[in-house]
Length: 121
Length: 327
Image 1 (tube, chains in turn blue, yellow):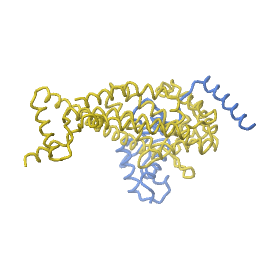
Image 2 (cartoon, helix red, strand yellow):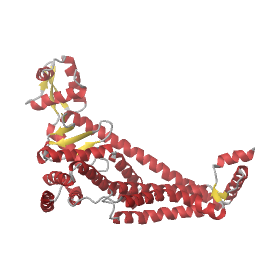
Image 3 (cartoon, chains in turn green, purple):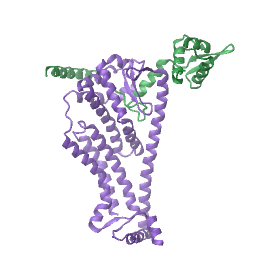
Image 4 (tube, chains in turn orange, green):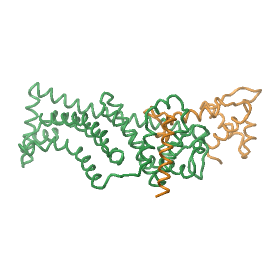
């Protein structure tokens, strides 16, 4: 039995990869993990309630589609992690801040000079 | 009254002169950990001095005597005397309000700040669970993004996150250095240090000291993490890693670019290039002593000078003395 978060992640993966909204049956086939239909259905419903999936009726069943692309979530996380101005960021200080190109070039020069000195020493 | 005024004066002097002295100190960048402790001592001492000044106004000082019963009697007399006059009662009430307001506001804002951070983290973490890939070999979470970024998410489920852009920008040694930097943040609980500094800044926005302390703390924990990474990977490797990630991320989102208008990353790289000159042990000891003295002074101000000169001391708890006197 996979961890709950793993299954959520795997289901989202299936739906992001698909061309359009999927039936639970199609998600189940794609997962290929020998899971029960009900397990996948339950987790899909939870993802819908959390706002990750849209749900539309298709005959007697429902089709589930991604509410937003994966890139959007990733970009949101990265921006959030790097927003140094926000006092209440979840992430602790990204390793990065941007740098002006001329400043970066100067530092590159300084650094390679120091490396050469190191090699000589 | 004299004790209260000295404490108020001390708090004011510290709040005005402290940040200037610390920001001008050339040793701060060489000993970031000591500098972080100095900022913490400065902020806590200013708050404590103000709270103690309120306390000193509320409870009068009395002559110390060897006999406890005598002391308590004198205390009750002093309290009755102070609160019998309208001026004395007003001073006492003002002091009580000052103390309670400072303590209450501090505790409230720290609680709210930490709770807010925990909420944000839980939300970030739950999204990460779904969109991130776990790299068990390196013990990191990988995010598919061209923007080079490495950061850590502190808390119960502490994790380090690396974007694919950063993986491309860094070689193995540099990645190792960057991860050592993030692990230093996590291991030394820099999130709590920064969280407390920011909570105080939001609690008393009118006091410049707290804002400066929070900004400096944010800067100094980065230097401290750089030093920890340099101890493992060498200073030039860390500098190269910083530079690779930072110069790769020029095309950043507007909010980030704005923050990057400062020279945080560039200054960090610049600092790492010349050979490290850590502060000598004598100067570190002297600095630690000075930090301890900051804390000790308000206590001396409250009890010390008066006790030494005229045998005065802070009156013990009023309720205790009242009940003893009633017997």
